[in-house]
Image 1: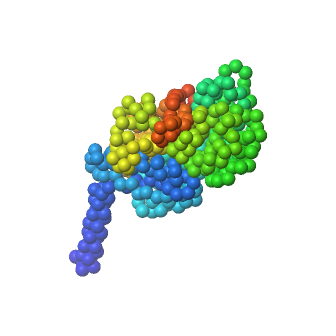
Image 2: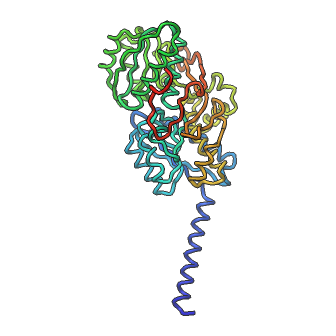
Image 3: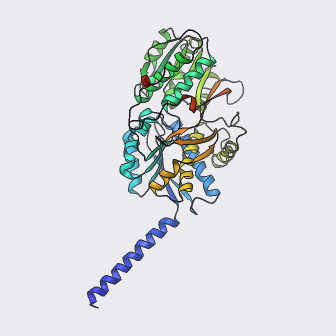
Length: 417
């Protein structure tokens, strides 16, 4: 054998050994899962709580021995409640070899992530973004949505509000001027009209603002000048808190007999305390000490582990949203027996698992979560934390979910009215 051939053989063997060593390290090292949430800016009050739920889920998995004999490691990034930043974060994580991602805690970030997932060969679990395009015109097989979509969620909220407050006959919405805000206000109003007992109520034109606004004087003046007694608020996180702080001082609480809001729930309650509106209804992911959650084994364990991890005895409902999304990814890995993108995606389609609100699964056609949705009513309290949840109402998603039309824009006019 020539000397050059021998050297090439040794070099090839060394390269193969190096590749095998790298492969073995990857297989024996932790399973790295990206976790991109709004950790700064206007979305942070929600994003930080969802991340906490994700961290608890990872802790629970690792405490039970991990997945496939390996620990789970969260690689955490701040998407800053910004679509371009969410895209940059996803590209960075993919470049670092991460193919499993939890992201899209709000619609603005999910709309950037969704079309990118196939290009990056990522399995992306949209945590809490409800915007319709995610599972309609932007749908692709690499994304799943771990929350109810806009139509299901806010049609259900509108139904709950009018069924619980049948005497309120004129309604109006305040919503961000974007896909999510326009749609959620439309779906809420249509449901109010559809499910109202007796004569159809009046739904006024939506008043628009910006999702990141801090000054709501113009919108508050419009609301106060309207004939409405019922209100839907489609702004979230710190923007919603700013709205309530400004609105209360000019008598808006006296004018509006019932208010439904996008899902801030206890985040607004903790901020407003005794100044919480007395009849405020919220999209509800979890109330740890209220039924049907309090007696649920998953809920009990989530509460116990959250307190252990964070030292906080009053977790936000948003913790459960992050926990549910993380468990969907983790159960997909377990069922697949692999961390490869295609295997995990295929496995999640058939996964059913327990959450704080009962069993959930995904619709195969469009990867939309199917579950029971909950809505809570709260008001001020004399005892700490000076707000209280007084009632929880549930609606099965099967009663309210739209037909799957992946790749096609959703059109409410095509549904029975």
